[in-house]
Structures are given as structure tokens and as C-alpha cells.
Length: 227
Image (cartoon, rainbow, N blue to C red; front, side, top):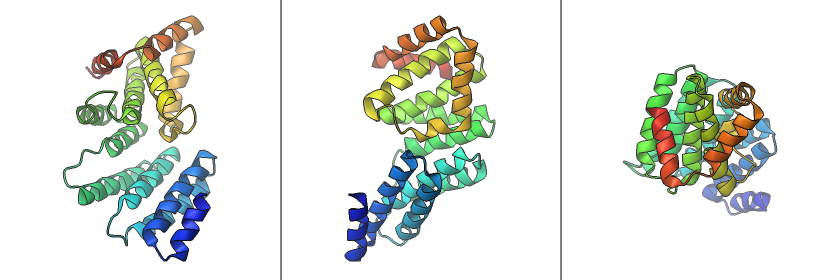
């Protein structure tokens, strides 16, 4: 189906449709684990996107390339791509709130071992997102950032509850499948530390408590972690 969309864009000489097809096909290959092909398709989409009048496909391609770079620990490259994506968003809609790029930059700061910058960016993202019911996927990514910060501070009980809250949101929105920022080294490290640092009963209890939290309780949990 996506190949048909891509072919239609090429057949109709419609670069916008072609860029859209490339981005969506890149995500499919990425979810299936082929990062090389995903990167190739995102780059092709970005090249076309730079020629378009409306450039949201360029924004998505740049963010995708940035996360792929972060998964390879190429922090400087990832940060450059995220900053370019943020600039594209502002060109398309001046003054737009962009929690996705803010949170991607927070993850980059954590990979770069800069928790202060990560916390500042997490606070910025929280101010953009009014509640977990608003843009829940972005809220889940924010909680993932806060989870890593809690682990760095040694608060594993709190981190397990945060992980439970984020897991519940991911399960309700994206399902248990494709969550690319969770493949970044620092998030994987945080989950390992939580599960190795708590006994099984303590982890399951804290995780279940977080997963069962309502909107206001999630807000308080995140606020407490961010201080």
C-alpha cells in the first residue's frame, strides 16, 4: 500500500505525495529493524522536502534521521538534525509549540551525559503539554525522559512508577511495538538499572501503581521527579 503511494507520487510527478510515501515507508522499515533502509528513505524524503513549499514531511524526515543518529550514539549529528527540524516547524507555523523536538533534544542531552540540560528541556516540554490527556504520546516520551533522570538520582522506586505510567500510555496509544526513543542506550540502561536494583515484587508493585495512575496523579508524579 505504501509502495503504491510512493509510486503514485512518482507517476503523477507529485513530489509532495512522493515525500509522504517515503516517510511512511521509512517508518515501516524502521519498525521492522532495518535502520539502514529507513535512513536511506528518510534522506530521500528530506531531499525532496527541502524543495517543497509545505515542508512537514521534511520535519518528520529530519526527526527520524535524528533519532536514528541518537540510536547510534551520534549525539552531535542527532542534535543538528533536531535543531533543523525545529526550525522547519517554526517556518511552517511561526510560534508553534513543538514538544517532540524538545523531548528529542532532552534524550540527546542524556546520551551526552548532561542531565541539567535534559531536565530544563523536560520542564519546557511539560509547560507545552497541558496534561497527559493532551498529546498522550508526547507525554509518554516526557515521562521516559523523567524516568532516566530519576534513575540517575538513584530513586528507583519512583523511576519504576514513572516507567509504569509511561508504559500504560504507550500501550493505549502506540501499543507495545514501535517506540524508537526507547531503543536509545540511556533509556535501555535506565530500565535495566530499575529492574536489577529492585527485587521483583518491589518493581512489579511500583510499576503497577504507576500504570494505574489517573491524569492528575501522573502530573504530580512528573512534577515531583522534576522538583
